[in-house]
Image 1 (spheres, rainbow, N blue to C red):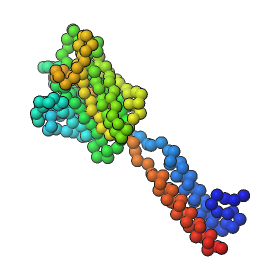
Image 2 (cartoon, one colour):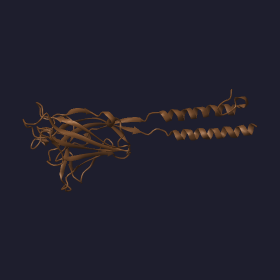
Image 3 (cartoon, helix red, strand yellow):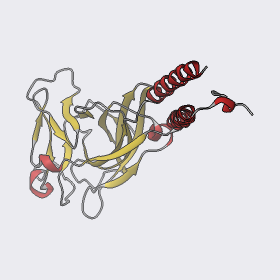
Image 4 (cartoon, rainbow, N blue to C red):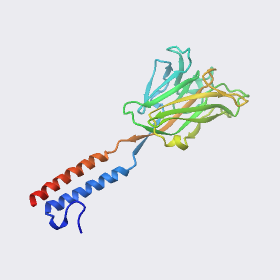
Length: 256
């Protein structure tokens, strides 16, 4: 029976060694070709940014490998407009105009119809968006509807842009509180390179609007992402295999 590359009838010890290496290299390249990309989870938790204030066009931050900024989407926006902050004491920081969730860890509060923007800071890896916590920000009012606002995430990458929408509930016994959200469908399995988060304010009639009232405000925390880690290129294994084949051919010619 003939070997695919080298005749077993004339194999020298060198041929046999080369044959084993060639098979290993080609098997390795095939395995890498079908190997799924490795993922590493990273959570945007804002914990290193406690108390930081955000101004349109002036401030940005890095948290757990992500570049983050808030900006105004108003056509009249001016550099220095207040667009949010990293809340670490919701009881005092929001009491004058808003009711903020009261929790033990920092989170981002986006106000005045602002937009949160995020991308990987240095490695620019693509990533999945898997889950997050969010709440509406606003005055506690008995007329607040059960869906007080909407949260939208617009994310883009090599495959295009997708938008996911999530309902933000009204205040409970303790005011506005965080709820847990998970992405689903195509959005949850698409690799993105950047994303925007913005809010809509809804009235009792179910009409929701954004960027026209300074009421599309939200709090967000613990955005769980999964970045794609680099894996060895299958082409490098194929090049190794090709080189070994060349050595085997040269050795066979010398044997002849």
